[in-house]
Image 1 (cartoon, rainbow over the protein chains, first blue to last red):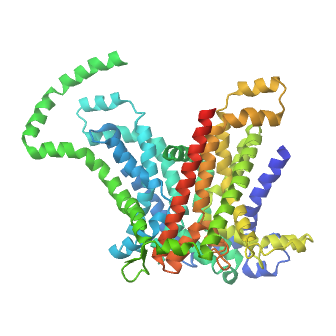
Image 2 (cartoon, helix red, strand yellow):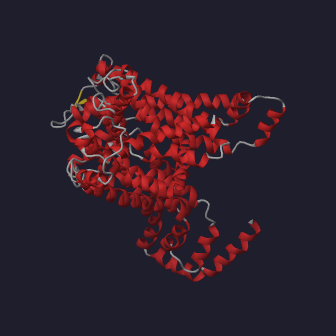
Image 3 (cartoon, rainbow over the protein chains, first blue to last red):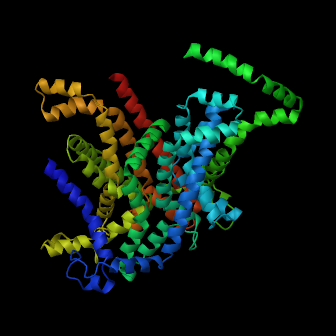
Length: 274
Length: 321
């Protein structure tokens, strides 16, 4: 049985191995090779291929744009969700549960329900194909799950802390900014990791809401390059796939434990919403 | 705790006495009182606005647009339920429904069943941590990149798989993996499982770790074999997490888009589309936005119905137990 699992693990790494080996070959070398399994003549060709990929089909611009969206929209979603969660759990707001359900209901629809009216809205308001438009949408789509997690976490922070701070003359916002947020570092880190990865990997909304280099995220650029697979040559396309995968794989190798914890959080979120 | 809270409250009352007068002074000015009462709503305003404008309003608007004919240039015109009636005889839509069923069955069999089996094996393996990492690695890759990678493996002329088959003398087994329906859907399900198996295993492992050892050991002492222990002890105790994993996989089957879009774009001749791909193609390739909206509605209603049906069935079974 253990041998079977071992074989499976090797089989699981095989596609990645083939991608890396292929991305290390030059295009003529790839086409004249006896087999795709042969080792590359010059592994350093990888850097030349990645550089070529960077300047093809808007991949480089897409890389920078996705980085911007992941960091800014991920951060804003956590900030707005935390503000909302603080008001819902700690301030005198009417119908706290209503506000929570209203925002959380943003997770129950399949994405296909958003696409056409968003496209229309973006055309009408001039948000179509702008970085601002992309950031606003990614912030909105990341918000409900962040609210779910932050609301759950704030509920575990003892109220005594808040009352003590109020006696010391701290304002509502001061309590949020200087006491509650610094205590919530660990769910914020997990959420950020998770939302950054989600935004980085999104293809659908990038395709629908943007079109030009510099606005279009990296995944639609990669899908566009894929369309010229035979023309550009497999080594270049796979080098581009590696480039598009680099940040999330790096995050996984460095912070994989948190990512897996984020996954169980998602499962809890789904269980809560269903 | 309760007895502790009371004197503290009394204290708080005393300490805020000077502040209290301030509040009274503020209250005499209507604006100050209003500002104090409105403040908590300011905190929820950004998230409510963003979610309302970019998620909830579009979702509601799709319902209306599905009753219209709209090419994106002239204003939408109301046509009642014509889009839905046309769906019934649209061969591309019927193929998409069938393929969505293939995706559900494929993910259940290859991802959920295999994932559960592997999680049980890994649960006692000394190398579990390493295997977990390896199997999870593809989950860190975007669906688009997964599609690109597996296109390089499966495509007819330049594909690595066919080249490998010919290399070891099994050239007869070489297939047009991505251009023969329904083989192309099955090939893409393999790519999706490569991405999704790791997370499924992790969720099952989390569940397995919450199962107490005692009932398992008791069953073993009573002479149950490994299969019996799994079937009659582990599996029933694992039910809560199984419900979640099956639910997530059901929903995911309806949403598959990225892998299909990068591997076949739903082709050839629309043979490998799922509902999500049909919705995208009708809207953003053919510019039949009203028709696309009706596909989105069908997808949503069916996904909700399946989810509700599934959750009710699970609750009934829990009650019987």
